[in-house]
Each structure stands twice: as structure tokens, then as C-alpha cells.
Length: 427
Image (cartoon, rainbow, N blue to C red; front, side):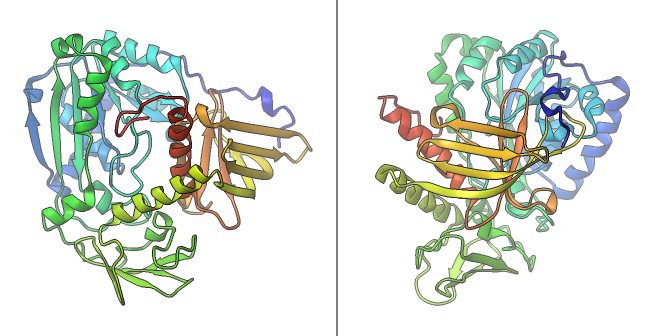
């Protein structure tokens, strides 16, 4: 480990956003156009969005990398600047800056980003944000930050939304090692609010409109549209998000293989059908709809938090750091605890220097997790400061999905106890 780790140059978050270099625009179009030919997205253009010219604010849902290709194509000749997480810049910082990307460390209160977005609008560009800040874990809406209404008021431009359907079931976050072979997708591209409506509405009213528009469910969309997925490995990885068995209530004993999900604790088995539903091989089908199982797991976490018993215990971890976009740096080994007080990570490098990352409950409304990160490292949690990101790989009996759910519910519980009322779908 570098003995001067704390002195390593950090990513320059304040560098002004750029307009896309002219010579990169045809390359971007060339790279994105095959997605339209392959997936045949049925696009619904609403409220005059097809004639809208920049600047405006675009909010998109987030299920797979395909989201970016669809957004870029639909924006046409409008210059756009995308907010992208720090790990997206690894080894290609200049390229991403040249196509207009703006760096963000996830789930941090970053005033620099607000200034960058204002610059984008002043440049006459489209400011593109994926407000869920992570791929959806099971094809449904993740929590949205309640600052979106204030941001829209500050930027004072039309608010546009792009909600895509089918991207999750084709390349689910719980196993993106292969696509499931979906034949068509759909999208709603909509001018949600005009500039005049933004000026007349309160931040809370704008938030309500955003929440209504961001209600989506890829598995419900699949069933309603009769989209069959015959991929033999369609359930591969599903146990990562459905970590708790509804039959025996054991945790971290579910496994998946081919089109099957099963529990090694009690032996219960479910088949994932070609329409994306679950069917028990024997006995009761507790949850045929995958998002219902996921929300049941959330309710189980809420029960532990209400009882004051939620804790991951002390888990051994290895930690990689990403202070800039050059490469991951191995920080060292240590421990992680996630409990009623939040996250505490302590790690010691090869020189005996100890570092800590503490994220108390009110500082983190959600957290970012990865399944089998980079296909070799395993499941991880990444925690951020304004100048560093730690990729934390636990070992032992744990679920990063549960930690993500608990982060949101601990935050909600903390402020609920202080009398704050959260709008549905927002934290």
C-alpha cells in the first residue's frame, strides 16, 4: 500500500462540464443505433417532447446500460451532459469528459454537482440524471431523493422524464453476465412539466409529479405484454435479491440455477416461468410476483429495526479505494458493522495504518451495492465521501441486499421518530 495514501491526487470534481466534442457525436450515434434495431423499443412521445429543444432537465429510470443508449438516441441533436458515477470514469476519464459526462460519488450531499448542473443549463444543454442512483434491484422503482423538486425549481427549465420498460428483465442487475434475449422493449418519453408549470408549482408538488411518473414494474410489464423469456438460465443470480426464504424464514440460504430458485435450508423450490413469475414446485407459492417477495423482505427488515435488533454483526472485509479514475487501490483488510447506528468500517493497510469510514443513519438515505462486482470480486457495498469511494467486500453470512434495504428503512425510521413525514417513494 502506498505509504502516502492520504496524499494521492483525488478526482477533480470541479472541472467544468464540456459540450460533446463534435467528432464524437457520430461515433455515439453509431454505437447507440444498434440497440434500436435489436430491441425494437416502442416509444411513446408525450406532451410535445418530440419538439422540445434544450436546455431542459431529463430524469431517467435505471435498469441496465441499455438505458443510456436509448436516452442518447431519443435526445437526437440536443447536446447533453450525463451524471455518471466515479467508477464509470476508470481508465477513460478524458473520453467521458469529452462526451460531456459529470462525475458523482453516490449518495453524497454534493453542492458541486448542483453548480455543475446549473452550468449545463446555462450552456444550453440537457442535464441528464438517473435519480435512483443505482440499477434497480428487482425491476421496480428505487427510492428517489426529496431534493429533486428543489433542483427543478432552481434550474427553471422544462422537466422531462424517460421511463423504459423491459431493460431489467433482459439484463437483471442480479445477474448481468448474459442477456435474456428479450425481443422488444418500450419507453415513455414525456415532457412532465413545462417551464411555466415548474415556476408555478411548489417543490413538493413537483416531487409528487415525479413520483407518479416513476412508478414502474418490469415484471408486471412483462406479464401484461405477454413477453416470454425462454432463456434456460433466466433465474441465475435471483437468490442475490431474494435472499430470505418465505417458507422457513432462513436468510442467505437461497440459491439459483437455470430456471430454478431453491432454499438449502428447507428444500423449498420455485420455478421462474417464461413470463417472469415464480411457481412453487410443491406446496404454496408464497410470492408469484418477484417484487412482492422483495417488498416482504423489506417488511422483515422494518420489523427488526422497530424491535431495535437489526445488526449485520461484525463482518471481515477487504476494501478497495477509488480516490481518482486511474484504478482501484487495495486499501487493506478489516471489519464492517451495519446496525442501528449505521455503517462502521475499519481497515488496516499493509503498513499498519488504520482508516475508518463511518456513515451514521441520518447521513445516508440509501446505499449502493454490487453483485459479483466486475464478475470476480464478489458482492460489495460502496460507501463514499466527497473525495473517496470504498468498495467493501464482506465475507461470512451476510446479504448486501438486506444492508441496502436496512439503510433506507433506518433513515426513514430515524426521521419518522423526529416527526418528519416522507412522501411515498421518496427519502
